[in-house]
Structures are given as structure tokens and as C-alpha cells.
Image 1 (spheres, protein in one colour):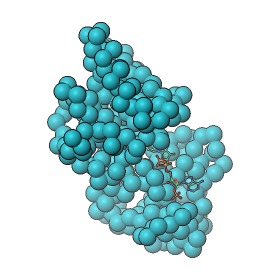
Image 2: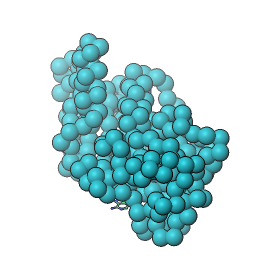
Image 3: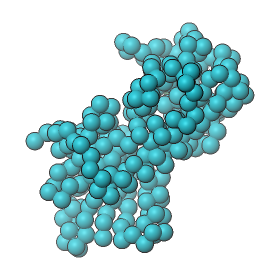
Image 4: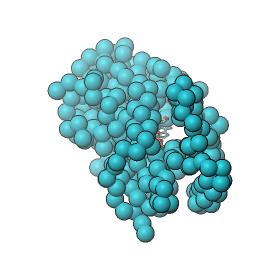
Length: 258
Ligand code: NAP
């Protein structure tokens, strides 16, 4: 049997666990996907060594893992190889365990985002405002840049090259991407603090959040006639990309450490 799982904290429920276990059942694949709550990242190496040995003793194989909040960046020093996308973004959400013991880190949030946003883009979409500066923001910045769209990030504490939420001119951007958790269930009455009255029907609003289906951010956009899209396709896209990695598609890796 092949084993997969996810590390994170807290880890009470997981889209990935439901997605993969349903898929394994539906397609009669001899595999299971489990939750591995991790109190701190230092415990990762021992957890993996123990699980790999246990599964091998039963004739099984620990094949791969997802990584979620708060470990997408902290995991990097624990991996032997990083693919180029993960290295550029500085965040890993998929790990592949190689038969020789090496661990390879990938970022599938970025390809998931690219596949989700591409069908909605117009040729005139040239400049994007990204709200937030965390892992999703970095993956979306990478994706937008790959699609030829320039980006700037908005932050509550802007660093060099970022903008503050004060005095935003939304007309400068054709695409606005919410990469903050504002508006996510159960805090659905919140939305990023941007001047929504400046929105026009020419703009496109993308929200990485997928629960609720329409966040307050997207509702404000829809009411101004904007194109809108939530994060569900991005979520499905990152899972499908993980699946391709785990099914052995060759990925060019970059050495991370000896
Ligand atoms: P993260 O690393 O914690 O980053 C969130 C960013 O949002 C922070 O860097 C922060 O930027 C900003 N932020 C946080 N709280 C805020 C507040 N109260 N007001 C304004 N800004 C705030 O989280 P993440 O992993 O990037 O995830 C962000 C969202 O994207 C979450 O809702 C997550 O579920 C979603 N997501 C969806 C997918 C998908 O597949 N659809 C994939 C990844 C993430 P500053 O401190 O610079 O302001």
C-alpha cells in the first residue's frame, strides 16, 4: 500500500485528505492519506523516519506529503532537493519521498493558481495588486509574472517594493488578488481594507479563499460589475499537480542540501 499525508498545525480537517481518500476509493487504488499534526517542524525528521520504517515493515511505501500552514517555508531546510518553482517562491506544499531516501519539495499552489486564473484573463490585464505577503501571495506573484502580468503586494507593514493599504489607487490595476485570510469561514463579515468604491467593470477580482464560495471581497466586486473568481479551481489545481508529481512524472530538481 502507498501512504500519503499532510503536516500542519492545527490539523483538524483537510481538503487534501478528503480529496485523495475519495479518489483512492473511487479508482480502487491501494493507498491511504492521513493527517500528521506536527507540534513543531523540528519533529519532522523523526516523524518521517518512523513512518517510513513502519510502512516498509508492512510492505508499504511512504510516497508523499502535503505541507500546510505554518510549515510551508520552515520545511525547506529539512528537504534534500527543491524544484525550481518552490526554490523561487520560497515555499513548499508538496513533498515526494524518493526510494533512495531523498526528499524533494515542490510548490503546486503556483501552477494551480495559473491554471485557475488563465481562462479569465484579457489581453488588457497588465498590472496586478496582490493583497497580503504570505505564502499564497508569493505563489500568486510567481504565477502572474509567468503570465506576463506585473505585480505589487499590499501589506499592513509594507517593506521596500510593497504598498500600504492607505491611499490605494485601484484604477492602476486590472487584476486584484486576495491572498489574505480576510473573509474566510467563519469570519465571513470581513474583507480586505481597499477602496471598493473605486472598482469598475473593467477589473478582475480573484480570491484565494474558497469557503465561502462568494466572499465579501468578491461580492463587492460583483456588485461593481467586475469579473470574479474564487479559490476552488486553484485548490483543485494544486491537488491535481501534486498527483502528477506523486505518480512519477519527472521534475527537474535543484539540490537544496547534502
Ligand atoms: P499566510 O502565509 O498566513 O499569509 C497571509 C497574509 O495575509 C499575511 O502575510 C498578511 O500580510 C496578510 N494578513 C493576515 N492577516 C491579515 C489581516 N487581519 N488584515 C490584513 N492582512 C492580513 O497565509 P497564506 O498561506 O498565504 O494563505 C492566505 C489565504 O489564501 C488563506 O485564506 C488560505 O486559505 C488561502 N489559500 C488558498 C489556496 C487555494 O488553493 N485556493 C492556497 C493557499 C492559500 P501582511 O502582514 O504583510 O499584511
